[in-house]
Length: 352
Image (cartoon, rainbow, N blue to C red; front, side):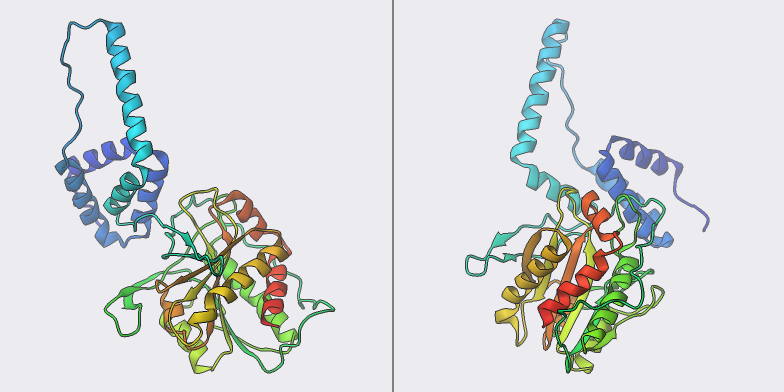
């Protein structure tokens, strides 16, 4: 498409980018990359206007006759003050920046004293660097069964490999009966070192898990069998409810704003017939998987922020985050040959 953006705006936008920290700049690049080309120019224009409409803090020289040494000391004092202001107001400053880029505010967590589970809102899915993708190493087929595997005969299990290759930005009802809406499907995270795409990794894990659970006697249904399929979160939930699933397992590998965050986390719906026990069950699932793959359990989060969980709260639904692709250790762990298999073993143990 022909570029009609004023050259002045281009120059201003480049100047703004040069002033941003590297992580903020990458975040903006990723947002523009994922945005339809037809909307990029308008977004950049609006961004430049907002940036220059805000009052700028300008250093004021009150005494030009001050010595060079006094000037240096004053500058150091100002830097020190600004540093402490930032430290004590970090969450507020970060929140305003995130809003400027159209991102949600920082996630806050608390601990449920009764269950020890983490409760809180939906986490942000921050983009990571995108090196050349390295596909997850496949587990040998057929998937071998453990000698002590559980008998899952009679169970109907629907597995949803999270995300898909091409995002679907059309909106759909997020919470049944409300005006809340979210995009139908997104592409997910990318491995910080491996370049592995979340949508591909979750599909590989789902395929291994399907074969293992079938070997245990269960009837297993995948919501998608390829990365190029376009299927919304409501449609995924409907597959679980239409098939009267006993369990609905949604597989994910998230990205976090802090690259130190790693571990296994489970999200469960805050509504439905299993809401009262969902948090404790989700915590057990997180601990079981973390123990099997040699990771850390981050507990369970009961939330109404996930469309797929909200529309499937009539069955036992769990959104299993097997790790964080934004963390180097988790990225490496999730791409190891036996991790998908070990996750399947852990899930079978939880279901049994």
